Length: 163
Length: 199
Image (cartoon, rainbow over all chains, first blue to last red; front, side, top):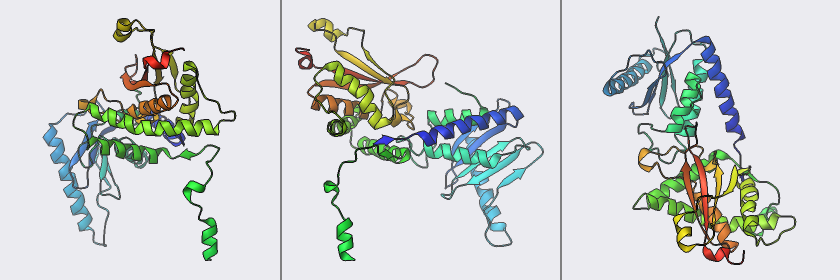
């Protein structure tokens, strides 16, 4: 009865390389938002010091507003069903959203020229499934407070090792 | 057709015990362990009872693990020495369960109060592991920061020691490591007086 951890060790290595690559190009991810399937904000964090901090309630309304816009966008499609907003691009930032099959939304606010947001969002989803869903003290649909998840996200998005 | 099914359908208890390595997916284990903890949490009144509950479940695993590992050994023998059984746990058991040896096995240098009182020799040992696989995905909430889910592993160790006739109290603790953000796990083994007689 050996429990293997090989797969996860590889994933960790890849995360670090990826975070390193991001760091070199200075294509920062400013913040990350996670919405549950009802559109409630369950996680928000900024990864660049220069981002202006808002009140806790402001983040929650921003999250719900995005959820609403996403729903409207998917209904506005003239050609059948649409999966909703995937990216919003402006001169100053780019918002990229990844919706899971369970209806959760992960979206990042980043530098407009960031090259591989799809991959990063997928990696964030993987971290969520590992360090949040397998944590017995996390209640589904509630806000995420897991030290290990925070640590792994910091490694991925900032390229820091907070050991 | 019918005879074919009968031929292949061997009752699970009639199958031979596999001799070699059998690996289990870490995710499957993590979900099962997570459910065990949530199940236990619903059935306790105070926080410290959770450790007891996990330890009790581990105890049942431990008694079976000892039998299995001794059965699989090439030259099985009964371990009668204290250090023998401890190093068996530190290397063989850890390897069989987690795929690697524990980080270290030490004798506690601090003579605790109980030992001073009874003037017996110090009988506390520690097995430490910085990356306990059972805790890989577990982040503790602030209200339960002293809990260590490796109590389950402590229970396994207690089960092994108890069925090998070395009665002991085994507990799991979080110990801060200098320069590291996350704590390491120390399994504290305190042998009962009768385990030390004549040894």
